[in-house]
Amino acid sequence: REALFKLKEKGYKILVCTRSNLGLDKKKAFIRQYFPMVDGVIFVSTKEFEDKYLISNNRETILIDDKVECFKNRELGILFGDYEWNKEGRESGNYLIADNWEEVLEVLENIELLEKYNEEYEDEELKLDK
Image (cartoon, rainbow, N blue to C red; front, side, top):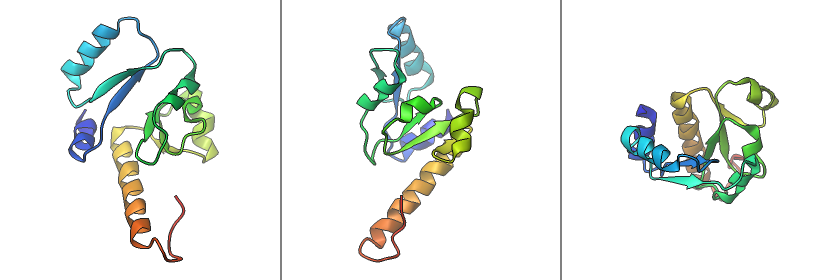
């Protein structure tokens, strides 16, 4: 919870995605009560993980999810948690990873630093790959 408040303070918009509309009103009420920093809930209409491609896919949108399938064709995302179902993805070295929300904050700070550095050296050969 604290990490989400910190993200909100830094200006991030926080959206929650759900694959099921069963009990959607209860989910929204729970989120409003316990996670007031959340800006909205997005209902993804089918059970296919790839549906998260409907969520903005640009440098300003960072998807945080525990399923590798959700990162198909995404520019930027953080693979969250150390679970059996994402072990292969975590070990592949192809994803930014975070085991908890404090590590999410660290990863985001590193992304921000890299982007700031690249902006400063935009026309020079010192620019780093993202």
